[in-house]
Amino acid sequence: MKVTRPLIKAFIIFPMNVMGVVPGLLIWFSQKGEMFEKYSPSIDLIKSFPGGLLIGSGVSLCWISVSLFSENGGGGTPAPYDPPKKLVACGVYTRVRNPMMIGVVFVLLGEALLFGSLPILAWCLIFVQGCLVLIPFWEEPDLERRFGKTYLEYKRQVPRWIPKMKSDT
Image (cartoon, rainbow, N blue to C red; front, side, top):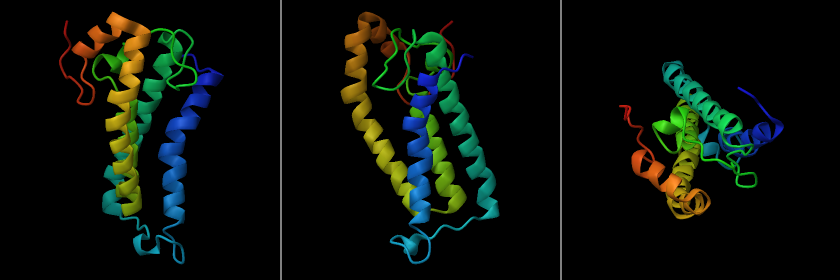
């Protein structure tokens, strides 16, 4: 796997802010004396394992998803400012069209569980709502314009959110 600067930049700008900076700020503002004090986080050892498992799975899925762009995207990244030159339809992208978003949701749910944080859970729900609007109404039409029939066929064969478990071969 070849990791490039644009790829690292794309990973830091989008997923790390959504999964790290915003939840970190929500935890910070949930401390005693802050605006979300009513929702102060509490780490429960029973919830730590499943929360950590979700976080680890989500981060791994995001990294795998992003790294496929450097190998197969014709020099592009998943970021809108540097889109791939070729359609990335390999690896996890053969099972589901939005594995990176699914990974982000796993991380946010894991963080909400790990920290017992309602503000992070609310942020996760806001993120999901944004994905439900932006992906079909902005990202997919853009991909259809850029990749034409190739993307339409890919879209027909690969589900948007729920991974297909069986291979078509």
